[in-house]
Length: 197
Image 1 (cartoon, rainbow, N blue to C red):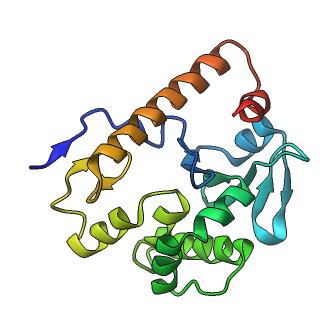
Image 2 (image 1 turned 180 degrees about the horizontal axis):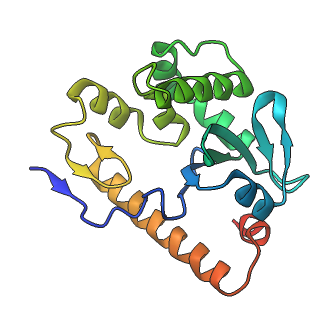
Image 3 (image 1 turned 180 degrees about the vertical axis):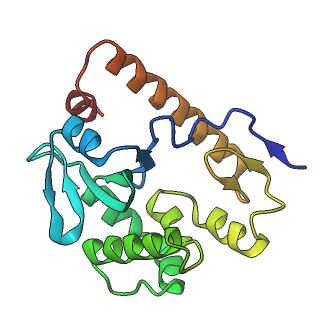
């Protein structure tokens, strides 16, 4: 039986979601690059197309794609993401995508290049981005093998493996989103919210 989530709160109009295990934040899109950079008050390291948030902060920002005033970004904690990518199941699947013996920066560079080529209509979707976002490897593999069909549930991603764990994660994402919305609505700065997480 397939379950579909009717209220997909991971849309590009809503804030993205933090994946604690992977130390990454789902891709979110902003209509104007300068607005997001200014709101985060960060400095750009243009040679790698990445943005480091809040000098000295453990949270970094990677520009994945920019076109006509739209920007897709990935927020991540390098240490946590590096450790997640070293997990055996994640490492095995990343290797199947051609990501062997690469450091975190090289991995993110290649993912950004693949995402840019996909968005420009040159390549298919780079499914490895799901791993960087912390999706379970079994769900990434299931999506590829089944072409996005015959899933158990559709939420922040399509679930092919452990539905119970995925539902708990989706609920945690909902709580995190609501918390961030509440905190920013009360006048708290993003830097303070991230520092507390």
